[in-house]
Image (tube, rainbow, N blue to C red; front, side, top):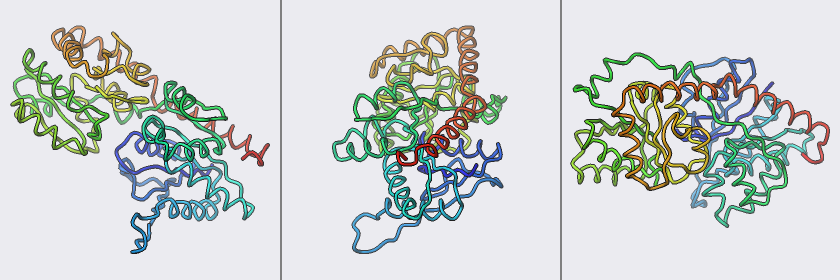
Length: 382
């Protein structure tokens, strides 16, 4: 099968999932064409079945903002037609679903039919999509897709609640490549971070307000008073200057390391004891799943789709958004009890194994075949 995948190339969940999906499909023998404005962050090695197509945007003085949607639609038409793709899979509704529809209409006039699947990832629905500026386009684009998937039951329900959606949504959860995130012995690495045997807490995100990184630091501050610890902060974004200043105010700079964006995040997860995710909104929580794949229990909020992956009292603990005290106490419960921590580690690993890409990839392949088959039976609807 020849599959086009459109995604953002950043470290965010939608870009990571789309790229990892493309790599897995290529390993199965499918020909994958990744289309974006930059090579995706996780596209870190050559693969004979993966082809990258960069969307180039003309910079004319007339335009205050570069017309990315038009450039992407034109690129899609070119790639689909020239490469004779069997289907197009776009990740993140804005603007990818709309540009896919435009490309599909242009190709239809040329007599070329291309089925389109849109995968909803979260903020394209829960935050951005609810903006009245975007809502009509998002609803229309989703309804015009030949197939729609969401990464969690929560996101599916939220989409139907806030948008006028007239077609079914298939839930296919996020996944991890367990071969990549398989726990490794990194004792020497751990000693470099925590030379005196301190516990290690970790957080990864894009440092936006919705991730509540300030809460991570405040939770760590409370825990560190009781159990000597270190905190690793992975990622970068608009909240970082504020977080750095907060660390200075609390006097915790010596115990916290800002490591920025990291490609091999699994090496840092492998030496950690707890993963902290106090987000105000998460449609799934891919970062938490990756932590679990490295045997790291999760201390998180109970919002959105997180409870579907972080099981209360088994793989970690859930608290209300903003309840820093409860999250800190839950962290201390595990850090003070080595036996319980080890049990939670094993539970976390087993939970991650149920989301191994080898279990999830067949769901996508089956859905691709279903959508292609149905679109051929009813091309007018498509």
